[in-house]
Image 1 (cartoon, rainbow, N blue to C red):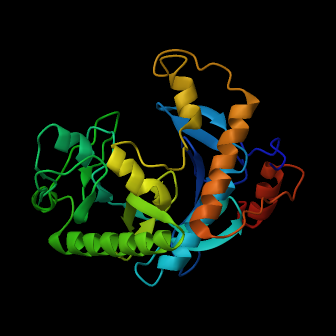
Image 2: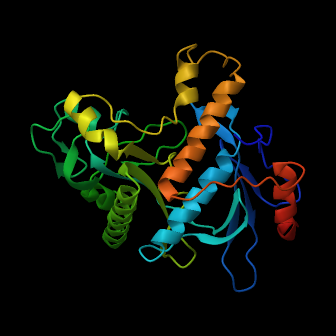
Length: 323
């Protein structure tokens, strides 16, 4: 394991304009250059979020996720335009500023999931018609669906809950026009097919994933945020799927919930103070992210160790954008 002291806990840089600090990303909106698009700096920190709070900082997590998203943006640009303009640092993407569409787009290839809006949760309650699809009787936990489906939900704000939607409701409620829905759904299914194909070649199953689509200043639909990372997607290891499915157990996967499970076993994380997380747990989680990067991309992860600290490196690489 590489030096675990190199952590980008935050990227709060006073010289950059119009800051917005999220749970994991620190963002800055840049003024548009003459004739160019409005831009946003997105810095992926090493913070890890769960239970609506920050649990810890995981060395190299931000670099892993930025570089994995870069891998997938590069390999899907022929399918769908994306927001990427530049990568000035391993943890940073400069993107076109987009207006995120008010519909959460999740594509699912299997009857899986644990949230209240997942198809497995709904199916086990006896629901067969959901999200504008009718699922057949007799499906089992984690079974492949007859065809991948989109399960859209409303985007909740101010602490609200996402609500399931059908394509008809999306259009009737004015969330998207029919033309926009047709374009978004076409992009989502094509991206998912590419992701499944490439994952299969690496011995993996891309089970489901979330996409963020937005409109640029010209009204074009782009894919933004991240794509096919372990934080936005569920992957199973293909070699163990058939045996697990036959036994009715959860297929083997990248256990990125190492810290989440550890914390959940020791307190009520929505109420209690989070106990100190031991260094070995931090190291194990860092290794999970690195292993996932290498398994998914087929590339060796090379941590960027330049600069006195990760923040010093990021500052140096973003200096041309200071105002």
